[in-house]
Image 1 (cartoon, helix red, strand yellow):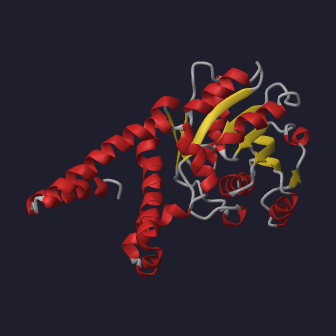
Image 2 (cartoon, one colour):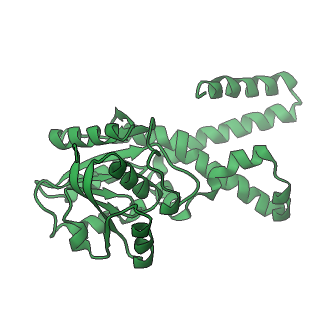
Image 3 (cartoon, one colour):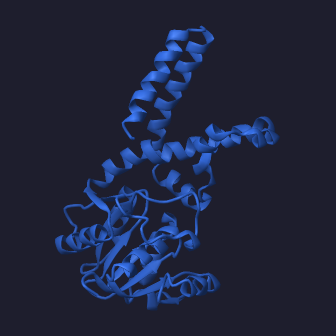
Length: 283
């Protein structure tokens, strides 16, 4: 091991947790990766695939790592950490990979004792396919990873976590947890919510019409295949920001309804071109 952490615990060995485990192993950044979860058969399969080096269903064992990665649905983070508290060693670093940051950061700063160090992180990488079977060691290569330190964040832990993400190929960016949640409500959480609504609209009108869906519909709704458990938690935990985004989105729907009702060709054209211009900036 050239650098990194001797022992890493992955709490929730799914797509993101599994991909991080592979990335760390492939780059020799840890000596041992422990997988923790409730389903022993799934953990055995992850071990067989070489994603983790050992597994446990005991929280005590999972708590003995230098670095603990929370990669479960965000709603269970607090319960897991409360169960770990009596077993954690001084100097342990905890990170999460959740898509919501403000409530998580605030909660951890409230409940973690002195000497247990937390750094909030959010890798902007993933897939509509879930599970460690789809894990890839290069998932984070050239991906943006948002780190959300506060004035209370331990500087040494922050440096180690930032360096670790960079060593597996990610581009690290720092911002406040509050600002993060405003951004990702708009560019991630809202699109997922709309994608679910689009598919449900087909279901409400005539679900048999789905078989006629072409490339446009498939591309626009690919993320509707994402995990209900994961996105349920995100929507609830970032509801304030999502509501604000939905207000503006609703205004856009009303605007295009009015333009269409007036059969305003130039208005429709301008509406589309405005979106085209901004969308091209991503590419």
